[in-house]
Image 1 (tube, helix red, strand yellow):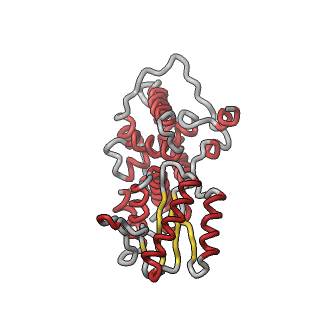
Image 2 (image 1 turned 30 degrees about the horizontal axis):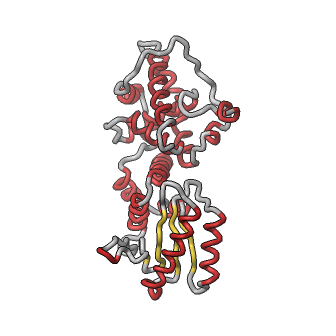
Length: 306
């Protein structure tokens, strides 16, 4: 697996993590653990009136019991209530089977509130024979990085590759751009220079940022393509279409994380045929070019003065 493939899959996993809530997040966690620990990890489904008996997954080889909590908003009060109820229920039903109890959560930045940290610490202090752990994005990403290429392809499909990036040509860009509906460009169009700190200002994760930086290697090719195209305003028309789509995603309700916006913009740009490494590289190159020109996402200077 080359560097572009790795970055693409980490970007895809980051977006899947952000988009998954409630039962969807539990399914994401179960899928990850089942792929990393085949024939070991056991997902638990609710059954009749007995439910899941406070078990959202069990790893018998390590004697770890998992309980997930992933609402749309991570409320400290509700989380603490669930932590206490789930832990006591786990002890009631599974005490002889586990030595470690792990709280799995979907906090976007991985950080827990002081109230939740205190609740976990208290449970650990009151139950010294049981290790109390937590599992958020960074812990799940560490597991995700253990997967091989076949597992990743079966989960997220084919990824762009170094070879496809090196061999990217005009024809590949045409295939991507011609399916995008363009509109007449405004009478005035300002193209800004990219400002330092734009990635940080837009709160893009490292996975997305590194993936985007790979695409910037082909930004000059995209610029050359637009300069040589028979319609001299084509580049501005494409930029206008991307900007309109970006603005719609930015104003969506509920609010989308910048990584989610990137993923949805990437899917929109690629269309239904976005299934090959070459097409994915072409989409990335165009997005990187427009990001560099500040046509999509916010200029760091604008964010700083907002």
